[in-house]
Image (cartoon, rainbow, N blue to C red; front, side, top):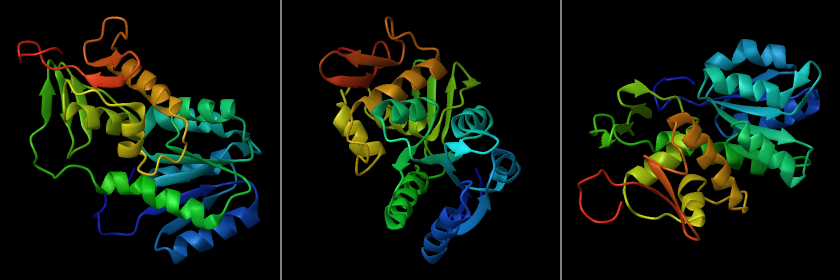
Length: 240
């Protein structure tokens, strides 16, 4: 993900094997102020992704599965990714989210809707905490909202953007239970997916990254029938 001046135009890479879809999306995104690059294959996308803030990624590519590309990106980059695909089944959507997608758009789509989704996802980055704000520290877990960095016992932990946003939302109020709907509204703003299980998918990814055992949680606890919370540090009074 780029780290340029926040006032500079954001850069979007459109990855789709259909030229007319790339042209349409490029036209709408450029009209909305974005700088747009294109790729028709996974190989081209790998070459160009280093300079962008967000990738619009088709699942069906001529030289590979877009989900495989997404997993590769997630292993090396925190870049935001919105899947654009003809696969409308719920299981496909959840697989995409498990792989690390930040949002999901099904073809045929409205280019205006796609542009709105891009703005909504990138707005989360713009609304990161102020630079210089003190990090949140909870029993070995450090969440630096301004720098969007997380560490456990001093070791950096790479998170996807949504995993970070979920953790930062809960860590700001340790001990408070957040329902799935509250987390959807806080992290996805308009709650694009509707299905609250989307939150469960990303909580599982967050726990894996933190090496946090859901059966004996150190950081993120499930409150049965209610939602999730970040545990209070031991000794801070009240139930964790």
